[in-house]
Image 1 (cartoon, rainbow, N blue to C red):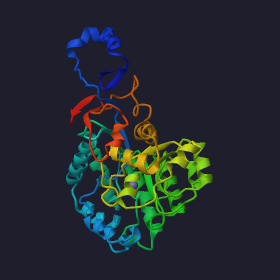
Image 2 (cartoon, protein in one colour):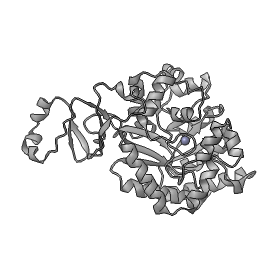
Image 3 (cartoon, rainbow, N blue to C red):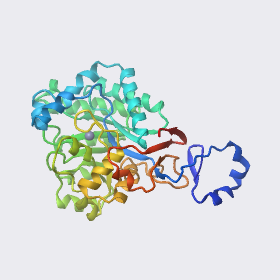
Image 4 (tube, rainbow, N blue to C red):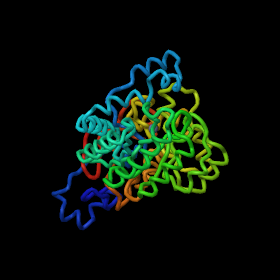
Length: 383
Ligand SMILES: [Zn+2]
């Protein structure tokens, strides 16, 4: 594989590459990486993460072990709202340093493109600060970051009982500012019981569309929501999808909205049920896999772990898991023209694994066999 200037130029046998006239002339300037019989994959595209927070949620972790449910933990002052104070108080540089550290951790496991959401500030100021922190970290990381405004994560306490007022602030302040300052490419909404209703989600999507931002949503994690009212906004992805009807699956199969499954959350919450990937894939819905990296329900940076859970708990084949973690993730972020596969013309985003067979990546769960990651042509060795 020959990469020049951050792009893949040609792919083929060594013999073929050595015949390339450009290569003959520039042989000396070339950095050669001998992958030693390992597996080279397109870098993982982690299309759903929440990296802007300050502290882990260890109290939630213990409470859940003692048997408290997601809703009970939220009612007891834990959950998403308990991450707000830290983010509101933190400076942008503290947040940005944390995001950058996580991006490096992700790259060490083979991830080269990351979708990063705000959503733990939930004031105009702290959501914009979170997006600025993402932009700042992204500028210091060789990989690619796609940022998403998740001002509609939950209704913050000061707006309790007045969710419409909060939605107004998302639509009239956060979205226009984020769009104007080009701080986000997507707007996300957590549409579920205890978060935002379908009608509120439509309002937020309409505001996003009006300001030229694309939309995606957390959908069907705790309860089922009818998807058809949202399809006119052409969402790039519906994420979680634990609860979805057959009718909606048929509808999705006719479109290019991706179902992004995040089994790390099901694992960490100790749920017996996982999203029904087979039902989606067999119906023809494109399925992506992501870590859902976040402090409450999925504190993992590992795409190989997400793939392993997809194989063991969702009955996806290793090949399906690999496509879901690369190409379909790129599609879910609408960057599939540049990311997600090893093809001439695409960005040089690669991950080299010290294994003989790609199926070993989900097989050796909990281990990291990524030896080298190449991010937009920049080589990082980890193994
Ligand atoms: Zn999420």
